[in-house]
Length: 94
Image (cartoon, rainbow, N blue to C red; front, top):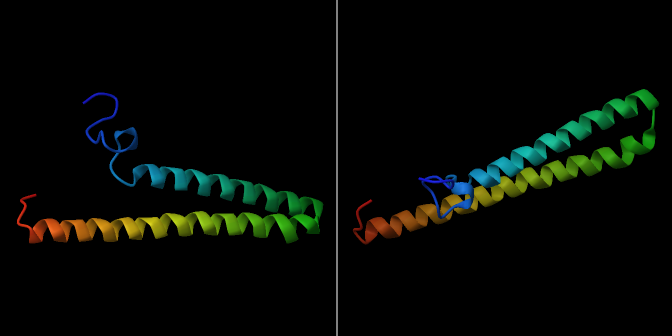
Protein backbone atom coordinates (compact mmCIF):
# COMPACT_ATOMS: atom_id res chain seq x y z
CA UNK A 1 0.00 0.00 0.00
CA UNK A 2 2.78 2.49 0.83
CA UNK A 3 2.61 6.18 1.63
CA UNK A 4 0.04 7.09 -1.00
CA UNK A 5 -2.49 4.47 0.02
CA UNK A 6 -4.70 2.60 -2.40
CA UNK A 7 -5.54 5.52 -4.73
CA UNK A 8 -2.07 6.23 -6.14
CA UNK A 9 -3.45 8.16 -9.13
CA UNK A 10 -4.94 10.85 -6.82
CA UNK A 11 -3.13 13.46 -4.68
CA UNK A 12 -1.90 12.11 -1.33
CA UNK A 13 -3.49 8.75 -2.18
CA UNK A 14 -6.85 10.04 -0.95
CA UNK A 15 -10.16 9.33 -2.69
CA UNK A 16 -11.23 11.81 -5.42
CA UNK A 17 -12.39 15.19 -4.15
CA UNK A 18 -10.89 14.82 -0.67
CA UNK A 19 -8.04 17.28 -1.17
CA UNK A 20 -10.42 19.92 -2.54
CA UNK A 21 -12.72 19.40 0.44
CA UNK A 22 -9.88 19.65 2.97
CA UNK A 23 -8.51 22.84 1.40
CA UNK A 24 -12.01 24.37 1.34
CA UNK A 25 -12.62 23.50 4.99
CA UNK A 26 -9.26 25.02 5.94
CA UNK A 27 -9.94 28.27 4.06
CA UNK A 28 -13.47 28.56 5.46
CA UNK A 29 -12.16 27.96 8.98
CA UNK A 30 -9.47 30.62 8.62
CA UNK A 31 -11.85 33.20 7.13
CA UNK A 32 -14.51 32.57 9.80
CA UNK A 33 -11.88 32.86 12.56
CA UNK A 34 -10.52 36.11 11.16
CA UNK A 35 -14.04 37.46 10.60
CA UNK A 36 -14.95 36.68 14.22
CA UNK A 37 -11.79 38.40 15.47
CA UNK A 38 -12.43 41.46 13.30
CA UNK A 39 -16.04 41.69 14.51
CA UNK A 40 -14.93 41.54 18.14
CA UNK A 41 -12.18 44.11 17.55
CA UNK A 42 -14.55 46.43 15.69
CA UNK A 43 -17.13 46.17 18.46
CA UNK A 44 -14.56 46.99 21.14
CA UNK A 45 -12.93 49.93 19.31
CA UNK A 46 -16.06 51.26 17.56
CA UNK A 47 -14.05 51.40 14.30
CA UNK A 48 -16.44 52.00 11.38
CA UNK A 49 -13.73 51.58 8.72
CA UNK A 50 -13.35 47.93 9.67
CA UNK A 51 -17.09 47.45 9.60
CA UNK A 52 -17.43 49.07 6.15
CA UNK A 53 -14.38 47.61 4.37
CA UNK A 54 -12.89 44.52 5.98
CA UNK A 55 -16.06 42.61 6.83
CA UNK A 56 -17.53 42.73 3.28
CA UNK A 57 -14.12 41.73 1.90
CA UNK A 58 -13.93 38.65 4.12
CA UNK A 59 -17.57 37.78 3.46
CA UNK A 60 -17.02 37.94 -0.30
CA UNK A 61 -13.91 35.77 0.01
CA UNK A 62 -15.88 33.18 1.96
CA UNK A 63 -18.67 33.21 -0.62
CA UNK A 64 -16.22 32.80 -3.51
CA UNK A 65 -14.45 29.83 -1.90
CA UNK A 66 -17.65 27.99 -1.02
CA UNK A 67 -19.13 28.69 -4.48
CA UNK A 68 -16.00 27.40 -6.20
CA UNK A 69 -16.05 24.22 -4.11
CA UNK A 70 -19.66 23.36 -4.86
CA UNK A 71 -19.35 24.44 -8.51
CA UNK A 72 -16.39 22.18 -9.23
CA UNK A 73 -17.93 19.39 -7.19
CA UNK A 74 -21.13 19.37 -9.26
CA UNK A 75 -19.10 19.55 -12.49
CA UNK A 76 -16.96 16.59 -11.42
CA UNK A 77 -20.05 14.61 -10.43
CA UNK A 78 -21.63 15.22 -13.85
CA UNK A 79 -18.47 14.04 -15.66
CA UNK A 80 -18.30 10.93 -13.47
CA UNK A 81 -21.94 10.12 -14.23
CA UNK A 82 -21.37 10.53 -17.98
CA UNK A 83 -18.30 8.28 -17.83
CA UNK A 84 -20.27 5.64 -15.91
CA UNK A 85 -23.11 5.75 -18.49
CA UNK A 86 -20.63 5.29 -21.37
CA UNK A 87 -19.04 2.37 -19.53
CA UNK A 88 -22.40 0.71 -18.90
CA UNK A 89 -23.53 1.25 -22.49
CA UNK A 90 -20.33 -0.37 -23.75
CA UNK A 91 -21.02 -3.42 -21.60
CA UNK A 92 -17.84 -3.10 -19.54
CA UNK A 93 -18.21 -4.81 -16.16
CA UNK A 94 -17.49 -2.72 -13.02
